[in-house]
Length: 118
Length: 205
Image (cartoon, rainbow over all chains, first blue to last red; front, side, top):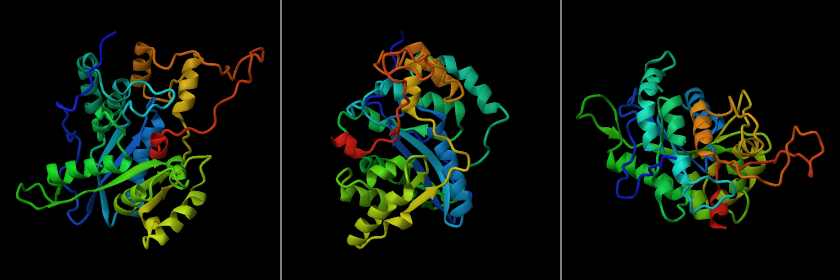
């Protein structure tokens, strides 16, 4: 079994590669959504919560807010909930997976389902 | 798994591993502050135009969770009032309605506490109704895996692949298969309620 690599405090950098850096409408307040949880395992429900929240903001709060990013924050292993897999498994993409994933990921990102904007 | 799911199924969602790599429990309020500081101080905020000299605006960082999370917040003693005021009063919260967790029951005590503090938390609680109900719960997913049942179409296939490869959540448990022939030792019963989104009270316990 490949040993998954989890970022350490020393190598941690805040992920911002998918954060929308520029507002589409400069008069809006940029809004970042954060879901905290154990995600053990992550399901379509967790992911869809973000999509539902974005639709809600568009329909009800679009005069004020523009969603510019969404983060999942899996809890630490120190939170000993029954049935929790290790944070490494829950949170991070193991290194061998990253290599294996790249060609497929490229296909997905270039595919017809890409959301052009938030 | 979260990173796999975000990278493969979304073009905007990210995983912040900061909380997961901490040695100690991090209250949700601290996680929200960390992300706020990272976006607004470290990155300087969100730009108002593509001109590099354009002024930047600070982002508001809000919590997103299911109504089960709101329910834990409304239970006395589970969350500290200081943290609730930071999370709801300062950041704001988006609550996705889930079956089994009544939102209005949870709103009443929260409103009472905030009024006592001279605040109005309710205006910062956005309740998002599900037009297509989705109650996929991690607890049930783990049970399905233990029972050797299919979880196809309930979670991203890359996550299912990962679970299979690493043999996660396969530990035998006492509960019985719900689709069994009734000859099992116990009653096959799906567990009710699942706190996918962890309350800090549970963490502090």
